[in-house]
Image 1: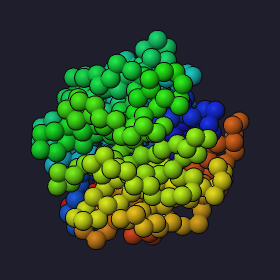
Image 2: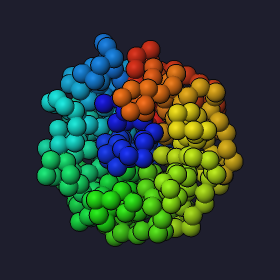
Image 3: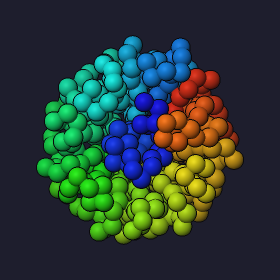
Image 4: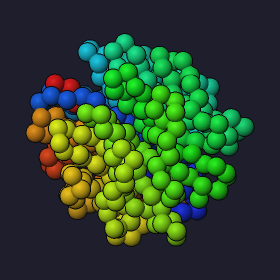
Length: 352
């Protein structure tokens, strides 16, 4: 399962791996100055094999294990005293596609959303809980982007499609993801659904991973592909595209605080040398010198939190498994390792 949840994918495996990965760091609608730090994590408890992977939420450095079977946590959102975590369980082996079950935990209590699929992003608005993801049919090869509102499913697309991120603003529900017009991965197009109505973000091969709405402006972070499938990090503001890097790069989370736009992702000097990166208003900051990937960004007052993973390199059968992965959070660039176990920090949420 390890290679299914990080941001690196070889071109030959890109369709499969991106469909199995978590969303774009979830959504971070917290705010204020200081407060509690929640992090959703995939963590191997008691061993490094897939069978030991568990969904975990960390609060201020204290771990709570959410599952007693193979599972992972993709997104965390907090409302009042209630903590919501979206993720996926794998009740049978092999841990793959139609064996996955999308779930949401409220204060540690599990609710299964579907018999087959993935939950990638959770957002709480008032009394309503929104979870974006997808359902699988026909053995996992027929995939539909969906959103669950209080457990009730709405299908977003009739094409093969993925919903990566959900954000609610002023009663409007925005969902970022991508669609495929055919089985060819080159047909992927980044899209945003507003109240179920689809808008395509350009004509290039692309994926949208994260959406954030601020002051009526809609920001979407994602990746575009060149003709030879080289990935470039981009952010769309109200549909207008800005490329963040000329290097091979990807972004997974966007957060807006006042007039500042923060985007978290990673750049590569080659496909085996990722570095976690944070862009603020388009200006790049590398988060350390280790092999690393950044999945989620959240801002609280003057503090900027980025959740991700560090490792010692890449290996495995396909050369794209992150070796010795450890969940980390960077606060204003200072690194904190959450666990000594194999782990990935997927989403960070700050509560004042």
